[in-house]
Amino acid sequence: MHSLPLFHRISGRAVVVVGEGPAADAKRRLVERAGGRVVGEDDPEARLGFLVLNAPEAIAERLRGRGLLVNVADRPELCDFTLPSVLERGPMLVAVSSGGASAGLTKALRLRFETLLPESLGRLAEALGAARARIKQRWPDPDERRRVLDAAVGKGGALDVLAEHDEHALGRWLDGAESPAAQTHEFALTSDDPDELTLRQARLLGTADVVRHDPRIAEAILVRARADAERRKLDDPRPDYGVVVILKRA
Picture 1: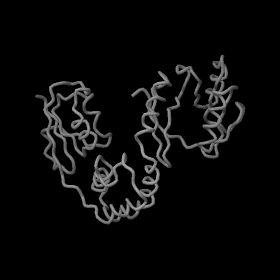
Picture 2: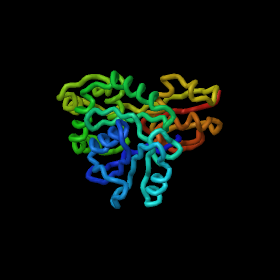
Picture 3: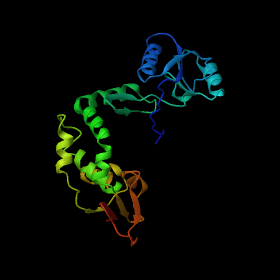
Picture 4: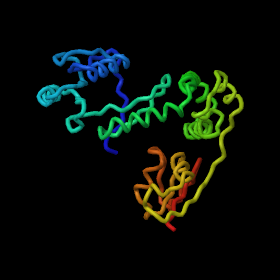
């Protein structure tokens, strides 16, 4: 990854914006939309700064010297962080970034996602947040709880994220949901290129609790699994649980 994706909470906090014109105004609106306070470059409380200037080098260096993280419009080499293109559905934020390579490309992807994600997604997220205690009580084991939720929000699930849901969908699911059965899936791979994974293989890797693998499997393949998935060598004798993917070299 070229960057570590983070969502920075700035509500009530000072954020420097320096510049004039439509691009600078857009940065001010974005800061205010996230709850931040737009301030000048001399504000001592600021920790983030946006510069929209023809010659930003001196101000960027000065702000950085005071400990601020700086974003410089159209100058990715001067940026401590970059701004993704953001799609909002209530509390759900989907961010797409090219690391400053092409704002047009990230915008195009965001607009495509706009057509895919239903308006009810935000309502579903809020309902899941409100029901967190009930869900934990129903499935106290965190691994089982994650598997149940994965099954519910996945393709064709009772709470499929790409389907429209009414306000009673979560309640109906909680009343009837059952824990999914343990699953084991085995793949024999002939290539170290992750682009040659089938859609099914990529999907199962992304949902696996445990990935058992031949030592010859490339890291480029293994990173397609969830970051918190447990990795094991094939000769590891520990018991498996949940969704298990076994990767071998053909």
